[in-house]
Structures are given as C-alpha cells and as structure tokens.
Image 1 (cartoon, rainbow, N blue to C red):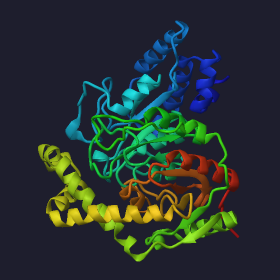
Image 2 (image 1 turned 90 degrees about the horizontal axis):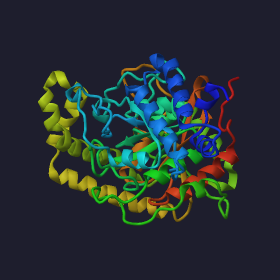
Image 3 (image 1 turned 180 degrees about the vertical axis):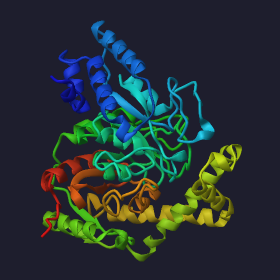
Image 4 (image 1 turned 45 degrees about the horizontal axis):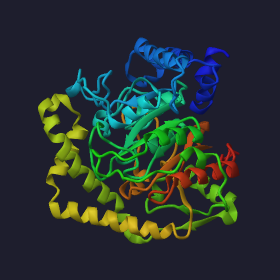
Length: 453
C-alpha cells in the first residue's frame, strides 16, 4: 500500500490492519507525518509537532504488539490534540503568548485515556486565543482564503486535510460543530459531562464540552468509546456505564427514526442557500421528518449563553490575562472579560435558570422525535482569516448540554462543505450516532446539493 493511501485510512481501517499485522504503527504514523510535511505550510494546523517523538511512540507500540501484549482500541492510531489540553510531552500554550513555553507535568484526562488506548499523540493543534474568538494561523483545507472555524480550528483542519484520522477539541459555544462544518468532517459535541475536562483549559463549567473530529461515523464512535467515562476530578461526569458507541454506529435502528427539522429563532441569520438546502432535505425525508418552530421564549437562549459564558470566562481568565497586560491578549478577549465582570449575579443566576428551563422544554420535544435536524452554521466557511464565523447555530444545543453531530453530507456555494447538525436528547449519544447512520444512508452523499441554473 502506498504511503498516501496509508495516510488516508480511517482509524477503524487502520486498527484492523495493524491488528492483523498488515500494517505497523510506525508505518501509519510515518504516513501521517509525510502528509503533514507535504501540506502543513499551507494549512498550518499544528502549534507543536515533534515527528521523531511521534515515531518513537509508534515504535514502542509495535514492540508491545510483538511481545504479545494486549492491544488497545486505538493501537497505533495518530491523534491530534487541541492546544488547550495538558500534555506531559508537549507544551500547552492555549493559543496565547502569555503561556509561551508552558510545560505541564501530566496529561489531561482525555489525553491519558487516548494513550492508554494505544493512540500516538502526534502533536498539538492550533486553537484560537484561549479558545475564544481571536483566530490562530490555520487555514481551511478546502480554500486557503477561508476560515476553518474556531476555536478547534487546527484539529478540524488536520483531519480534513488528511493529516490525521482523529483529533480532539472542545466546545463552549460552537467550537467543535462549526469547524467540523466548515472543514467538511464528522464532529461530535457529546452530552455535557460525557467526557472529562480535567486538565483542559476551563472557560465555563456550565458550557465546556470535550469532543472529537473524524473521517467517518464509526471512527467517531471508536474515539468516544475511549474518551467517555466518569472522572472523580470532573464533578459533571457521571458514575454510570456508557453504551458501546461502535455497536450503535454499525447497526440499524429497530424502527425508522423520526426527525424534527428545527429552524430556531435565528433562522434568518442563515444565508438563502442554506435555508433552501435544508428545506429540500426536510422534503426529501418525507414522513420521516416534520417541521417544528420552537416557542418564542427560546429566543432568549443566545443572551443567556452569552451572560453565562462572559461571567465564567471572566472568573477563570481575568487573572492570567491581567498578568500578560494589554500586549499579551487581544482586544476582543479583554472586552468580553470586562463584560463578564460587569454582569450582576442576579442576571447570571437568571441565565442559569433559563438554561435549565430550555433544556426541560427540549426534553419534551424529544417525546415526538428521535433527533433534531438543523444547520451547523449560517452557511459555508466565510472568506477571510480575521474571524472564525458565527457560532449562533450551535449556541442553543451547547447551552442545554445536548449531544450534537456534524454530518458532512451537504455542499453549498462553490462545492464547499455545508454542515448538517443532528441533535439528540441529553445522554442519548449512542442512539444519535445510530440515527445519524440511518440519515446518511437515506440522504446519500449528494444530499441537498443545489443545482445552479
């Protein structure tokens, strides 16, 4: 098999080849490194990369296999890590000059789980500054003049460019689903608390989620199996067993699922092409889909998320940004933290209460459907590199802690990826993956593509 072909294997394919001895961890890692070397100057997905260290990890894994030791579910698979997760063998600088040279002593919980599963931690990917809006250096692999989204920009771009099969990131507003949509890859923002955030930069306990990017739905299931679980150091994780996501990704629902096409109160923020495409998708699904307009009180979700995010980010980041002075952080970040410091406790508590009420309202919606279909973003990736695009189409689902997937099954302007977001009930991540599999089969790869006259 040629090096380029090896690099494009999915994680699921590669683990099978490695397990049967047809491929080594070193060969797979080297192929990914070759792909990185070929296009990293154009895409600029990585903040920290040490090829020899990555190959050393792979050789150690090959030695374990040769010695007859048990193989983990990600044995020999290179995984890229957003540069807000602590790593004992790479710097963790959170996209900020204030933290230049910061070297943690230990791995974040998610990174430790990946290592224990046999993954090769290939490097650290670019994040926006402190995982907020100020962009990093990464370009969109589909069009270098367009944003890859944020804040998990490097992780999404690395997977989309064929540099790695898997990467992890975080979402506090739209930082997983939006870049997955813009870069045209599978992305998962799981239920709040499914994956530990210990050792990752804290922006907001209420809103922070750890998620993953992949080339296929089975690959998402594979990495979620590894990452999900209870952590005594993260009070929002749950002490309960999770389903086998891989099993759900490979089976058909016992009954055809029913979907709700939800426009949300910000529907007019979507561009005309996106609105038309999603109307077509709903029409193609026929009786399997109904249109739902959320009650008027849902319009307050975006202000509620902003209030919570501003207050909790101000609490968590003010000290470090003040240490760096004005030259150490962007104006957009400083202004947002200042906004958070001015919000009254009564407004913050009301926003938290509103989030709970909206979550309860959405729980009722799932009494009538299995999943919600809605755009992942207002349209395709915007031109320009000075901003990362609006996260607005992700905000409601982040605020309420619902699991969301980006499915790269649609195309928009110029053939660029247009994200379809599939949202499930809290804790229903496994069935959401199964329903996504059904939806992909039903729609087909060319679903929703608009023909120009």
